[in-house]
Image (cartoon, rainbow, N blue to C red; front, side):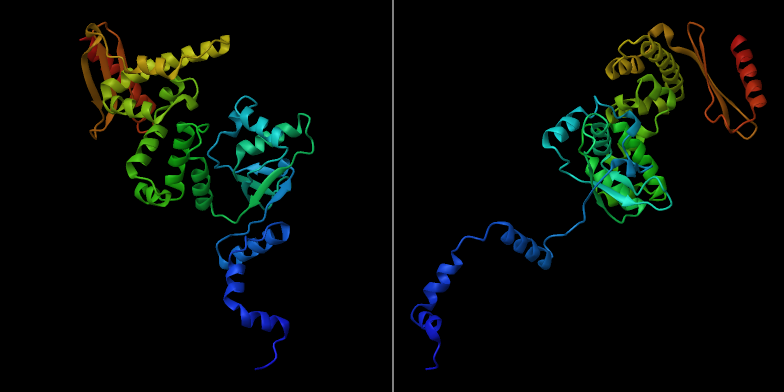
Length: 332
């Protein structure tokens, strides 16, 4: 037998026991072992290493297509995050950014993390000048940036349905050529789920103004209002009520009063007309090509609602003539 030394001798008398004992040893701990475990994970492909940086938030701008209304952020809106950052003494979750070129004032734009950016900026101006903004730079196309931003914010309660809906309406045109099915596939959501948000984004400006603030609107509101907006008679009535509500909301805001709640607005918008107020005459005024220029509804009380479906389709003088003709017809 070849000489093996003391180690070989020990192996020869108890090889199985030695190996079994080693296999039962606990994993190494501490800084060095943690580094070894991390390197092993990277080598095996089970972990991804990403660069993170701490920077001045002023060197970042918000991506123009970010799905959050940055101007609507305030100390009140971000209070929970500001308090958390201050208690931790640092930002735990990095914002996702991408590098910008040709902008001497900024090095990055924020794809995900507008609230973190606002909160860190606020802290730096209120007693914490050394607070830094934690970022994770990535190389992203606009479509990839949209999907990452949506994925991060989809479950956040502080992002309103309307903000998300407007973002989806822009994205379906910008990234998916109007193909709603393709967009739903890329986002891994159902088409019906996506349709509800797109329906919300398409509400008329008069209806949105009736709520006082777009953030008060939800997809449930759009689902109830959409059928009323599709019928000419109820659409004209709903838009008239919306304009009155919007004026009331402005007066309340200017006076410092609490605005009408979304539930109060919906109650007025969806209230059924009184029997005596039901329209007694309803007709369309069409042009020579058979296209509707004007939709006319007259209530029993004598009030008249005039609705122009496509204001840019006809010359203003022709529309005025159509209105004169409609009023003359009602006077007969």
